[in-house]
Length: 364
Image (cartoon, rainbow, N blue to C red; front, side, top):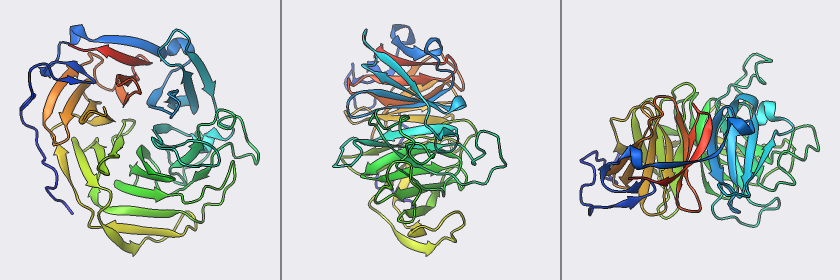
């Protein structure tokens, strides 16, 4: 249900802001001086990173990076400091559970999980086991523990260390955590936004998915761009989901508390508790006219950062869609993937072209 609950606005940069506005992009209004931006190298090709796609911080402040080409995950302890440690891991069954990983999303308020704080991942894959077999589309979001004695270390049943998985969203390019064991994904195969409730996880390396509750939104529809991000973020203070609709050239908002269950969807891939459409959700266009927006970040100060895959420009917006600032990284088309506001309030950015992860320490 398209509504105007939030103002869809692309009016002039800095409108209504005092001179010298401060966001995670830096200080100033309008187009910032790219020559004043200070980018600090964190990790890259020298440490074995060669296809970084997304990044995120766990509750301890460790930085996790998805390296798509080889299904590896890089965990950076004490990131960006002189004492940082680079831990390169591959899950015991990464060829399925971490195949073509495109997006991560970490809990921001850990509960009483048996296996410690958790995160979700999803992959832009139709399940070929790294090209070994014909695609069967048996893919979707995966639940993991951030406990480093579990992730990439335990493999009790030959299915790696994953805690749960659902398989209704191949070609997934974005994922956002809502609450315990509940995630939203950008399903590129069905051009849909889908809500996944794993309910109780099945434990390390098991495969009981029967309690899953999956709702595919009947609207809005979204458009995946091959090999490009389509990331999502939930504002925990409002429950609003922000969506980078890459192929649509826009950023959407969606009220996660709105809507109602619709008709069942014919279950093809697996037997789960519920697989149905979700109708009449409230949503709207927040920002339009972008060149393949992909990376999204909320800076904790009421600003939404949007990375344009098509240009290499990062924009800062108020949550009503008013543009405040923009910063041209100079990296060009196809470079910016994941962006994240770190625990330090600074912007951490994946430059896939380098390939590297950088921290923005100052912008002018």
